Length: 358
Image 1 (cartoon, rainbow, N blue to C red):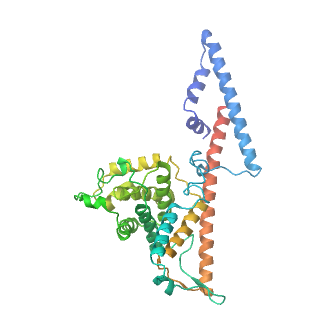
Image 2 (cartoon, rainbow, N blue to C red):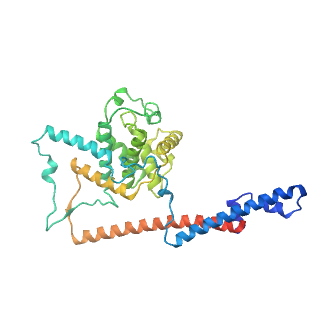
Image 3 (cartoon, rainbow, N blue to C red):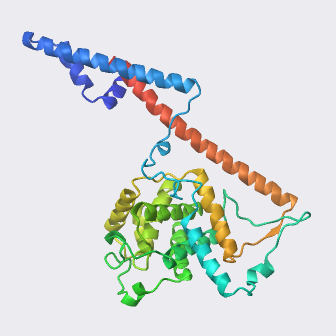
């Protein structure tokens, strides 16, 4: 087992050891001795660094997961909502601009949602079935597509890239008239496109929130706009990355080709590669950023009268919510433990390899 570990960490280790066992030419002795001495020093330094690492771990320091250092340093700014939890989301700012304009035009108008909305009191608490750990599926997808709608409606310009242009990379074999790209899509059109993919692929609802995070991250990193010519491919690329980064049982690119029918596997692979490159491979979403997007989507739903089914909080519902939260916490802890054990196993393998080589 030790030899196999040594081969994996240094494929030329056996070749070097075998060469030293045979007779050595006189004129090569000095060079071989010098290289062996250098290898011994390198191995000693590596063993010392590994021992120092494990001593820090034993003293209470935690192992770093790849998600802790993959964020680009130049883009981790407080002005970027997809990276910083205190920065306000872009879609909520755009929707508030719309609501401000609507309230100014209809200052004396009372919206229907304000008449039917239920409010909590001292004796009764009204709650819906959507939580941070398990959001309501239909309402969450509806709010995410509403956020995409506001992104398109209140875009600054029509800046785009060829990889996202649907006129260059169509998603259907049918001929699309030019008028389709001249007008902003309706919210129901965006919802139908996203809901079809989520229902066909059985994607978890959390992927919808991650999709919105990746979309705003792309727009922030590239200074690009989402417009009628590129919104479908931008959303499709974000869904593709979200289901792979978040979903435990991620689907393959070929599965998206079966859902959309007319898109090719080569096109899906190219879209994924360009998306990752534009995001600088920063697919990490912290829990605080995820929570911010969830609650901002709730605010968006409240402003646009998206119907959540409210019911009084009973003892049975409270127990169910508590059990649901405990189950999600246990799942998160088990995932974190798996990540830590995987990282520790990699460093233990390196330590054993260094011990065999020395």
